Amino acid sequence: MEKDVEFNVMDDKPSIYVDADACPVKKEILDAASLFKVDVIFVASYKNMMSNPEGKWVYVDADKEAADLYIVNAVKKGDIVITNDIGLAGTLLPKAVYVLSSKGKEYTEENISMLLDMRYLSAKMRRAGKHTKGPKAFSKEDRIKFAQVLAKILSNLEGI
Image (tube, rainbow, N blue to C red; front, side, top):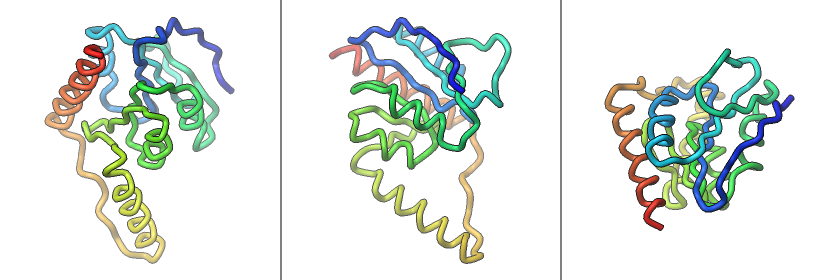
């Protein structure tokens, strides 16, 4: 179930789409968007609906891939997507979209194959009963790095 929301998205400026259900850097995204005057669209499951959230929100069904599908269908070339989902990143890169993790890691054509392979191998090991390390805990340094990388991308796009 999608909530119909109209956006005043300017075609010549990028928009930022956020895979928002578990995103820890919403404030940093809103701050950067305000500074660079770009639209931000947070996409989340209706199960995570908040009352009076800051920013523009689209709520989708609770299906596992509903937010991903919304983002894939909504983005245009030059937009920025914030997600920790490597599979979603791999789907977006051919659309000429900037994809950034909440820790400030930029997904690129150069690193996505290796990241997808690592994800596959970890899943294969877990299915075989082997313990794999999870991601490191989110830190203050991650938050700072994210804000710096997002600002750099937006600054570069503003100069175009």
